[in-house]
Image 1: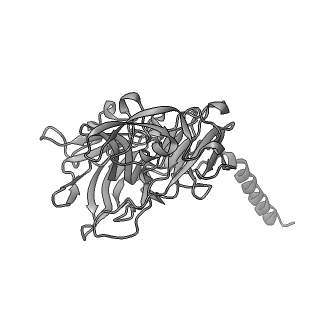
Image 2: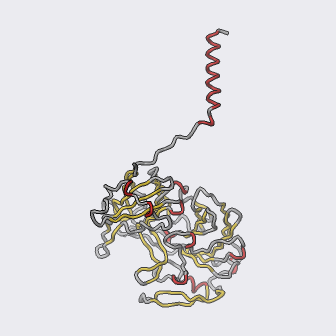
Image 3: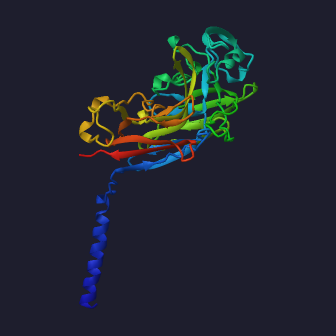
Length: 393
């Protein structure tokens, strides 16, 4: 063989084997976090049909219809069930009843419940319920929803989103300790544009549900209240890449809703509901333009209100101004609906002036964020916009 050709072959072979031997040393390039920008969350307009998850470090958003699921199971160490608060889903436990086939509207409760309520004049009163049908009258989210905050009785998840605040008790690994629940499936998303905000349509009905712990997962039993012979089941394995796995009881399947835990920071749910106080009255409350942050995923956030010149403006706020002690990791509702103001006399909605937010994501990136719009150019609600910026040394 020609010496020159032999030398070339040896060179190519050496390069090939060198490349193969270094495969283990190849690292995936680190993508720097987004420096910021302007994002228009695709909430959906007048009916706020979508729930939108935004990842600030990538600048990406994921939208899913808020009527695609009713309950979600937690993928962490505890066995928990969350309700779709953006669809006005609520739930009540039937204490001491574990056979789902025996439950109908006429089923008697194992003991009567005395609950707080409002009469037709919005005067606080109490009501005693003895049957499932009587309990169902005060289950839907609204001003006349039953409950008792002092006794810890709420048929919705708490607004702050802590694990201990779910309407469902923690699911026991002992099957006989898991009772049947009546789940109000919330309200349809309206399709008629009335020229104003229109987010709550017709009631979607009720279902009876029982959730069991199944190894590293859950078994969900469910059926209409009229079914006294059998029930359907959905099995779900925990996937710790996600906070929650969402379930459609109406379609009988697992659905994709949230991105992976590390891939979102802010949730523009649009609609948000919970049982709480409005003034001195306890009732089921519903909000629009509502925004949450990913506390289950370790995202921290705090609000800054500019009241005088001693507080830096959004433009002037820099990384040196960050107060680590102010970050809130145990209350997802810090932004809530307070980022916008509504004039209830005129119906005019605007961004709240002098208010912005500081965010620390799960990768320890710091951002400042302020809202810049709540309506589109024609004055229609459901078109939020925000500006954000990475804070660096």
